[in-house]
Image (cartoon, rainbow, N blue to C red; front, side, top):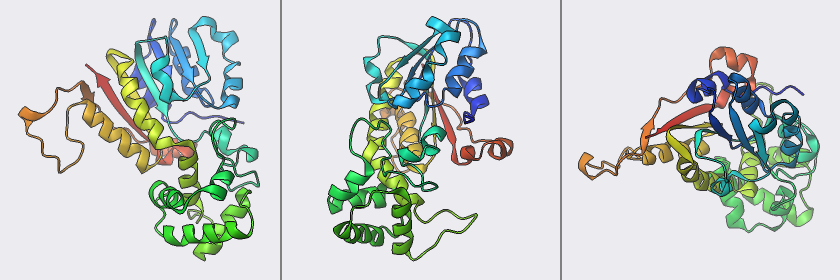
Amino acid sequence: MAHIPVLLEAVLEALKPSAGCLFLDATFGGGGHTRALLEAAQGVTVVALDEDPEAQERSEALKPFYGERFQFYSMNFEELETLQEGPFDGILFDLGVSSFQLDTPQRGFSFRFSGALDMRMNPHAGMSVATFLKTARREALEEAIRDFGEEPQWKRVVRGLLEAREKTPIQDTLKLAALVCEILRCQPHPGRTHPATRTFQGLRIAVNRELEVLHRALPQALEKLKPGGILAVISFHSLEDRIVKRAFKRFAGLPEHRGDGIPMQERLPGLGRVWKDVAPTTQECERNPRSRSARLRIFQKN
């Protein structure tokens, strides 16, 4: 299974790995970014995190090549403040679902395959989507579909899911996708976004607490940076990107919203500066379609 790290050249350009640098890869995934950092210069050290047990298994392949220059911890990045290592020259987050998770039917992330409706980043912790659909109150379903999935027809989807679960449990990816299509009276067409895409996104974000975890992790990452260190975050949808954009503005002492209008003399002292965000090139999108919606935001600590 080929793994192509997203925005790799831009990440390396931002982090500028050189001998003696210490980096944190907060989302190891397939290990593409970690490996590239380790290969960029002799003496680079990388600490990597991932709560997915399968990512831990993949990390074992790097240890014989890099020895003490590579360390892996099986943990959620919302706990990165507990790391003994640091401060770091650079910290990277590559958010969202990895290609390994999407391409493994039994993980339940994709409606391209039939699989158990799980979607947990760590399948040994928390609640699966199947359990969430069975037990969630209406308010929790509304938040998942309306707020996290940004589904315009969220009322119809929530009502349809509530009615469907009264008849039989919703436990399979293809059955959920078909149900959403039936609710929306819309069938998938080649070249168009699948009608169930937003529902799947919302449910995944809900069971993994993805936005809450990101909110908690970014200030911890800033604390773990050396002066002059770089915090780089790759996001794949507007909800994540908005959190990162606002956090970086807050760190820089800038207004988070257009209408904030904080006078210069009343602004908090900035802790660093925000770099221009980076989008994938046309060539990268052609080479790696997963990168199409990616956005890299960069913050440099004072």
